[in-house]
Amino acid sequence: MEGDWLVALAQDAGKGRQGREWQSLEGNFFGSTLIRLRSSDPPAPSLALAAGLALIEAVDTAAEGRDLALKWPNDLMSRDAKLAGILLERSGERVVAGFGVNLAMAPQIEGRATADLGGAVAPKAFAPLLAASFARMLDAWRSAEPDAFARAWLARAHPLGTPLKVHLNGDAYVSGTFAGIEPDGALRLDVGGEIQLIRAGDVHLR
Image (cartoon, rainbow, N blue to C red; front, side, top):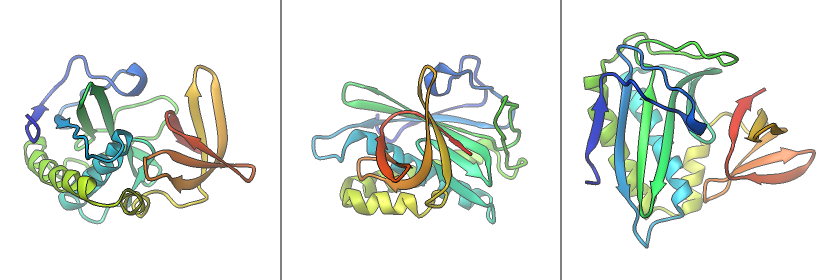
């Protein structure tokens, strides 16, 4: 049911975007929840904005004073290192939102910097914080104007003008600077003075 959460203390078959392996390290958070889409809801891809805002709010509450920023489409960064990730998967009119947060230990990922909270909060204590934050953000997502909600996400993201490299698919990449997001959640990438809209891809800070 919507509002219920499944939280695992360990995973043996976790995955990230594009089927990447997700390392299950002791003391980290692995949780997912179900959203049932309604006909009156904003565009479903913009649900990622609500998930990101819920996550950064929960981490702010659990470990104050961290230098946090959201990175499109689904990462939470601590300075320039990945602290947490979100995976949204849709089937029909249902979406599962999965969250992985490095509460205690940061996995080693080739070519990427990672960070953790040093055990500042245990998974069982973090779960209700995230659940409450996500419930509030889900209500806000459904009631707020899409452009206002996009501005709220943008206020917690890395700065406009940040150099980005976007992996689209296969060996295809495009580089540019961060120019914001659309109300439906698409990335605005400034490529030589022209704005390209990116609706799917992995983003690397350059």
